[in-house]
Amino acid sequence: MKLIRFGTINKEKPGVLLPDGTKLDVSAFVSDYNEDFFGDDGIEKLQTWLDKNQDLCPIIEDTIRWGAPLARPSKIVCVGLNYAKHAAESGMEVPQEPVLFFKATSAIVGPFDNIIIPKGSTKTDWEVELAIVIGKTASYVSEKNAMDHIAGYVLHNDVSERAFQIERSGQWVKGKSCDTFAPLGPFIATKDEITDPNNLKLWLKLNGKIMQNSSTSDFIFNIQHVVSYISQFMTLLPGDVISTGTPFGVGLGLTPPKYLKSGDIVELGIEHLGVSRQVCKPYK
Image (cartoon, rainbow, N blue to C red; front, side):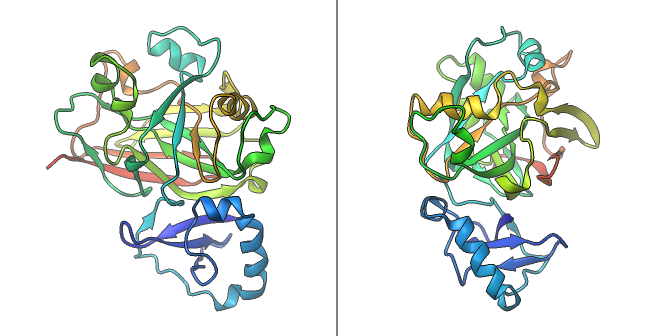
């Protein structure tokens, strides 16, 4: 199943995307895709309800905005330097264990919303990433059982301001959390739709030119390891997002470095998880 949300900002409703591309409003069954939904076997219950009521669901018109495909979660946990070539282009050693940082949930926007280059920014950068949506509370879980705690997967552009992140001292979070720095979607693919999340092609284009083109098979730490590892340090709640890192090809790693400017168009995608597109706009 593919979960979507639609409508104006802060007034999104839940929907589903059918295999033929039809988008259905399922707000008659569930108010939103949030912690309560994911934690109460919502995906299974929604599928059962759809089997009986699909023909009664309103069709969502193509002109309606796509929102982020889940309500604001309790946290976004990110894994840094999870591809060896990206660590090299960043001038950092390959980590011996996952590098973790947080991204503010207020950064979440829809998959086709604008990226707003923040006030004072000179080094806003792109990062295509596979993100995990947690489906069941996870605390001290083993790698063997990690997949049992996953609801699905979603495309994420982990937009980053490198000067804020690296040059301004302190933690990475302030370079990762500016408004609009977490476009998610277009949809959450439930885990039954993804045969092997550790072997998915992912790519990103800037103004039509391929900048990132890789596969999650290049992970340093795979999905099972990441979920288990994070759960040793914090409880992951239903609906929480884990972003699993970006491959090589970010602006920071180019010679000379290249960063986003107003008018730039970023397009990105992951195999089986759709494509998103953002236009860069200046802060006003």
